[in-house]
Amino acid sequence: MIIKVDTQYVSQASQLPNIELFTHWTNTVLANLSSHIIDAHSFESEEVEMTIRVVDEYESSQLNEKWRQRKGATNVLSFPFEPPPNIIIPLLGDLVICAPLVIKEAQIQNKLLNAHWSHLVVHGTLHLFGYDHISKKPAQVMEDLEIQILSKLGYPNPYSI
Image (tube, rainbow, N blue to C red; front, side, top):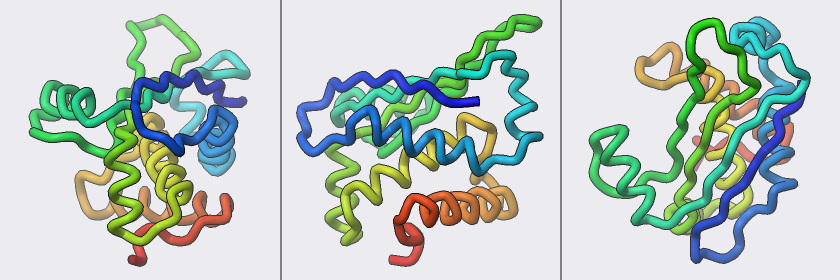
């Protein structure tokens, strides 16, 4: 199976990853997931789609407040697709990434910009596959998987600042 990434660029920021990078990052996530995680989504197709929407702070803030009841922009929001019962559609979901915040965080945390972008794409894609970090044990599982995937992509551990 592969992930086909549709991109929507509505940010005024520059230095944004291209669709090839987004596709590479998301498919590296897929290649590192166990088959039972992938099978749990019941995709009958060899290709599943997701959208990555790159936005500015205003849209991120609006979505964050509406869907998470939190004020202000956030770096990445994940919206897993939940099909109606007995309907199988090869759609994984959507990521909304706030470009100005990603750029600002990379500078503050002294990270390479693409390393931070890839981390947020990996993190968001894992959410689309059902991973979360609400409690300690699942958070550690998700974090360990992120570190493993990012290492395979050639990026350092994002949690060792």
